[in-house]
Image 1: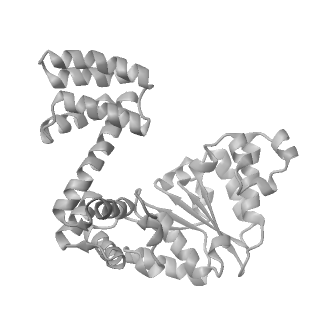
Image 2: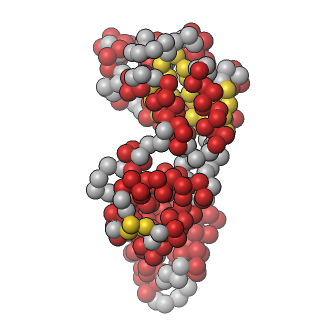
Image 3: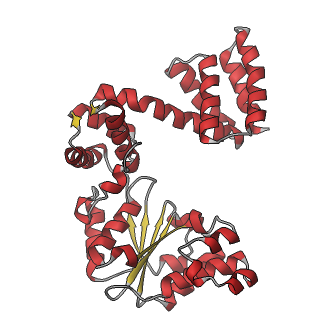
Length: 334
């Protein structure tokens, strides 16, 4: 995409959130800053909701909202954490040398919660994708939450609240964020395309919304892709613009599933491509190689092209495409 992402330039205010129950729950948290757990499927708008809450409650949200993506912190190396500009100010060379990665991350949690808010009486720390926090780090987080409860509001966003330890769940008010309906997504898209002055019709917006399958972020980016590629959002334009994007996502999933040994799921996607979309074996093979290369998924390029070369010869003999491509998927697991 050429310009700024619409998900950023059209970030919702609290009143714009499509789920009415979430709006009401967060509005109650304005006057009384509670620790929160927002849980729901990917793309439901959990992160956007927390940012909208911070805009409403903090005079200086840019400084008093601290966002820590679990994968971005807990999944990084000790050096990557130490060199992160968000944390380098309080990770001294001595601490970097003498601390384990676990101690360093615990220090990051504590320091992120301990500094005084820039404006107002408290700040907000968002822990995004929190289902990935190890239990020992969750115990450390619990102690940090207890120590800084007067000046820091913790908001934990997760797809799987059951992954959180009971002491953390008991210290937070839980808010379920269901996936928005197609009609609710259409309402969000109408507001955005009107602001962007994009030519559109109701069928086009509904097609974009329905194809996102409850993922609001995906719908907004799908609308932007269609507008930038075609210049309008009609059903025909959206079908042309998003068809290849959706197919690439499915092919990437097929490669990943095969490489992870989930052969049944991978072959189900293969059947969809061959039967429902009417692709032939050569087309599937070419698209698989393109997606694997462009998205860096599957085995290394040399191994993948060696396997693909063998399968291409089998396909050229004109026998069963499904059989040969299934063989390729099985080889990815090896």
